[in-house]
Image (cartoon, rainbow, N blue to C red):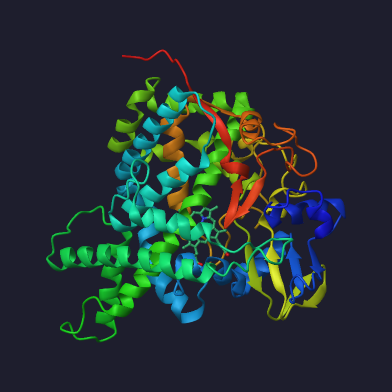
Length: 498
Ligand code: HEM
């Protein structure tokens, strides 16, 4: 592992390093690693669709304890992301219906409104001519959307400094480092105090929001069809209590429901913001590097929404199903997620795995399932490092049948991503609203110079890039583009149709 990190940026996400390792040593679909003393656990890396299915879909191995270790302070101890068994099942059952497509379609107008604010902000960015990291603004957009979708609440983090969002982002910045060559990096004595401080701030804020929300629902004032996730969960909870024989006088919001809901709210915001913002940042980057594909994406938007891009937001609001008629844009997003999936699942080894007719005991192993290595394997995706949106577009010359279980950016099985439909909707809407009005150009050169770095710019080999991209995936809770992807937006002067 150390040998691999010597050839990669030291802060790169391990899934890229595992992918390089598989290529460099010609490894098969699984391999064991002994990284003692860095980790006392034997490690197993999986880079094969069938094995991935065995651990997530067939056996659904428990999540690794490392998830709670690295994200427990952000999402809370009852988080759906890392709890198991009955506790996880209960949380998932309360919130499942909130993230189903028919319900999400009712929320599209509010997503469009948030995306319009984002449009305005990148317009200001373009007018300033400055080089800035684009991921942070996208992350704030996703937090604002999440506020509306889960709580019917305006965080307004794109335009103002929100108390909750500041505490949340600060809490993330106090995350211990999962990959470090320096053993002292995680020993900051202030860390537990800061975790407690920001947890209290976030929880107090959300508790007040929930109390207000529940008070409203008790007065039956919330009758909109566009319900946020918290209202649907409350309906589901009340129904479950009724079915469980709890008397109506005893029903209502008990402390347990509230505590659980607070952790799930934090989990949705945590799991749903920088995963989506990083994917969006990479989509802008890849399109800016593939002008033919960019032209095709713009042509599709012209066909669906007409050539006057200023009408797009109204058209989507009037007819939300239009966002489901964008096969090429969908291909762009699927291809971006194939190349730069932001999440790798890590599980606790239990029982056995069978590979090429041999059965392996995996008890006690830390199991890394590297979807990125599968996504970048030529056996499953020809020309694996190329950006080919058409491989997802039926009827196009390069359309490809995807081998079973080989594509898994949202993972599969009972622990798949609850927010995957929401993420795809958000990203389609943001691309539909911005792609025809702005060009994007990455500018690491200027960014590096401004930071006074040696050999600035697009140095790709060795320790400054990966897979031919200076925007390698950095490990910051998830896999984010290096330095937040610095660049410029440039306004396009398109002839408008009136
Ligand atoms: C491009 C965007 C996204 C990607 C690539 C992504 C990917 C994933 C993956 C791979 C998992 C499984 C993790 C594991 O097995 O360890 C997961 C779980 C999860 N995701 Fe997402 N996600 C995205 C957006 C979202 C959004 C918008 C939400 C908001 C609700 C969300 C909420 C969650 C939650 C709560 C879980 C845990 C589910 C469970 O264990 O039952 N994600 N996500």
